[in-house]
Each structure stands twice: as C-alpha cells, then as structure tokens.
Length: 227
Image (cartoon, rainbow, N blue to C red; front, side, top):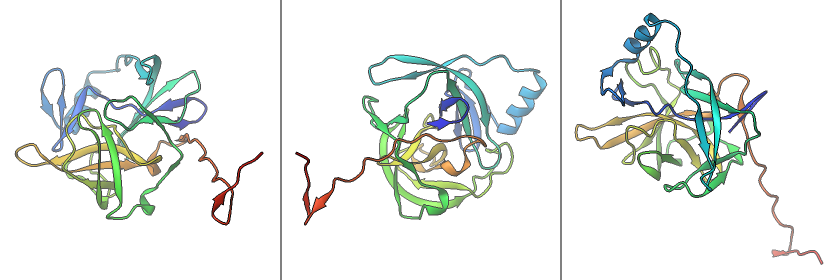
C-alpha cells in the first residue's frame, strides 16, 4: 500500500506479460518489443481513459480504483490506482486469496543479500518462496523503455510464469518489492524472476504500514499479565 495526498495500491497491468524481452498482447497474441510498443502508442495520439480497476477484499466485496499513472523507465515498473476511501496496508499472500496479510515494514535493496529467502504471490503461480541470486541485475534488451539499470533483484526459480508481473515480493509481513519479469528455458520452465525494490516507488509516495505489536513484557522469561 502507498500513502500520499491520495491513497493507492499497486496493481499490475494484466493486459500483457513480459516474456524474454518482449511484450505479448493478451487479446491479440501479437508480440512486439517495448520500444516498438511505445513508438506505436506515440503515433496513435492521446490515450483513451483507462477503465477502472477494482480492489477485492477477502469477503469478495470490491472497491473501485482509478488509474493515476505509471512509471517504467530504467529502474521502475509500477502503476498507481487510487481510491477516495482510506485503504488498509494489506496484501494477499496465499494462493487462494482468502487471507489478507498486514504490511509492517519494508526491506530496501541495499539491505537485501544474496541467499536471502523471499516469497511472492503471483496471479499465475500463487504462493512460493526462493533464494535471492542477484541484487544488481540489469535485464537485457529494452524491457525498461530502453536499457535497464543494474537495480533489479533476481530470485531463483522454479516458480514463475508470464502473468505474475506486479506480484508482491515479501517475507512474512515485510515488503521487498514488485515482480517485473522473468527468464525462461526453452521448455517454458522458470530460471529466475526479478523484481523492483521498494526503494524505487514513485516520488512523493511511500509504503503504508501497520505498526508491529509490541512484545509482551516478561519477568525471568515468564510473560506478565495484568490483573
């Protein structure tokens, strides 16, 4: 969750998937590079207003969200969808999306180490955890609207698929970032995926957190209880 003058959440653009340095339109199946896509969009004139997205709660109630903007150059890949109502710092961690987990903190890229275990909850693959392989990964090609900077964090497979983009990356209740893309073998199996760290949220926005509960006081190792 993010907070600023408006409140919003991360939500992936499910109309496409990033696969091996290309963009594949989910409706037409046409494959094109990101630079070709941007050139075509620029030539087509002003964009039409994007449709509203919806935030779905565990009880399946829904809250409309309006598209605010997107950032996708060099070291970022994020969209903002906002609500006029206050939002809670919650995210889905389980595959079935039945339990909302609170965000109590964030880990930045410089504090992330190779060998750390992180988890993600993808729309295609559900919940899984694996080890960090690189903290200075620079994807090849033009996935970042041009050359990508060496700011992406790569996480070992084997659990990733096209369509997981935008998934939360976390450990427990600590947020690490958002999935951007992945590398695949010839048979389609996942080699690794990579994510944008929470360091690189758009300017003026920050992660909305729920303060962690304080530890219960103890005396000699035994918990104290008020009467």
